[in-house]
Image (tube, rainbow, N blue to C red):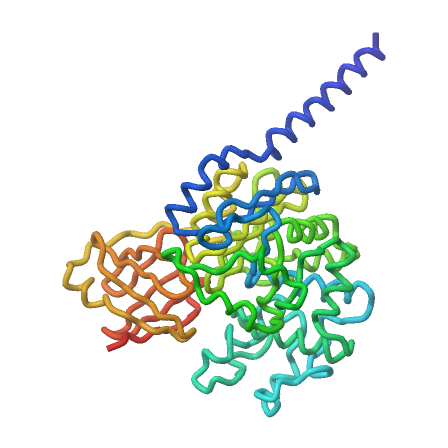
Length: 444
């Protein structure tokens, strides 16, 4: 009898654990019926969705079109913009694991950008600073008035999201190992984990017939030759498929071959951006999720590109979403909310959603801000008055409504970004709690 009791208790424990796993880890695929509506509503031609459960690929599907009239296959190739950065970060950490690279060794031992050669701060810059976005650089040098690379802060002292930092790291890796970043990524990452459709630039093996060409917020095709004109960029040039990037995420979930100390360093919140959102080494880290979970994530955004990956290493599940349209953010947010049980919480943590009071402004004040602008990225922006708010659209940006919280400060409901009009012809766009991302001038 006692043996039977122990057997019953054992079975109850197993069944209970199994049920709990089903409750917590099951992905809802009912979003499939809504995908085409989201694509049409937001003028996004295609979306690739990959879902990982129990450390394995459960679902791969690409919906929509590569470009008008060309259906997208499930192995469609997307440019994924800044989702390149975690790939370069993991490549680097694998070199650290092998004892060939040091996170805290100054990068000037291998590379000095000519623009900062005379600035003594270049001697302090390390890989850790780059991977946590504390390099001291702005996002891109051409945003600076001099169009040259400049240290705006001492490395390691301030957070500033920077593509330039990753480019700098890429040059250092190439100089030390006397190999191109393409060769390093191919031998250390792509081939070992089976990323057969991934490349850092448009090479002769690129299958153009599978490429998801870039589209603006109205669904119009950008210049189709643009992807071919770009070279290797450690911050944002990766071309890949939904399945390949899922393979990359699975490798990270499995530990990426890293020692526990290095992996823990990677997921440690080195820079806190909000209560739950922080920067680890190459990843955004979302803490204090239900069931003691944490998430790693990274998004990508460029002209005609909006992408996102989120995964939970403890429960070994995740999602990869790739789109080829400026409004892709609205599609992937819907997919995340509908497919993951804690999707809404994840989005609130990642985008630092806050409650804003909406101020009622006169049509005269709103019209004052309306017009055409050019920002420091060189993007053409159009702002119009619409239903007591402003609506912004333009090259490489989603079309979103901006609501007034003061007479000159506006916010979108979808993401925590502030738009501040400093004069009738000047606009400052701030992210990460007040850091200036770019400025814009009205075209007269």
